[in-house]
Amino acid sequence: MVKIYFHMPWDENGDIGKSMNEHLLNMHWTKHEDWIAFYDYDCMFTTKDWYKQMVHVIENNPKCKGITARINRMATSEMMIAGVDPFNFDYSYHRRVGQHLAKRHFGQSSTISTPGHFSGTFFAVHIKTIKDLGGFPETGGIMGHDQLIHKKIVEAGHEWRVCDGVYIFHWYKADEPYEHSKAAIQNLEDYHLNQLKLTKEK
Image (cartoon, rainbow, N blue to C red; front, side, top):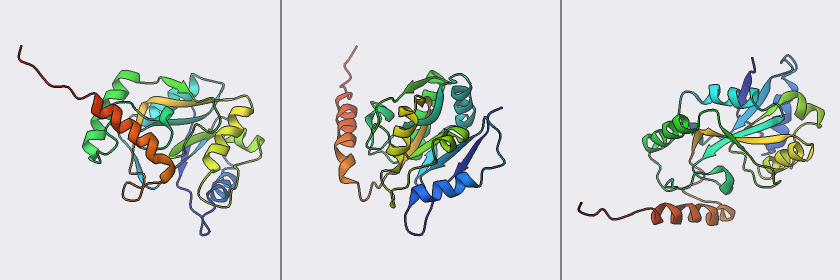
């Protein structure tokens, strides 16, 4: 059975790619089919079946060597959920969204094949594959390594998939947003507000 080992990367100089490679080097005892995952400090899964779903996607898509999940707030629209309120920070609300998606899309996945259309709030990669490709890119900082990892996997001919039934709540610097993500989040908010409708007497 596939096993996914989770880590939260940290480096005293902010080199996240370097931290990921240090974790990767320590995974020398893993089996051929095992995966390594990384997640941000400000994100949370919303359902209890997230691990089971990810294993299902991995085992049913042998060309897939990288996975991620659906997320409420980020700069990458391909990973978000149309209709979700990106300015709602009530975790109970997002747990209801997660339960809905898990019930409706359990074990389903979509591909992200365009390099650069990926944000690394959470992701997992096949350990042997990333080792064969030379490890994780090191940018010297906290930005850019996630897109380079996605690019490396995809351009090597592998699939990168989004687990459509796995939903993550991401705080994503709500109190100090990134400039580059404002447009994507605002588009999501506009879509959410446009879904509001007045009820009428029957």
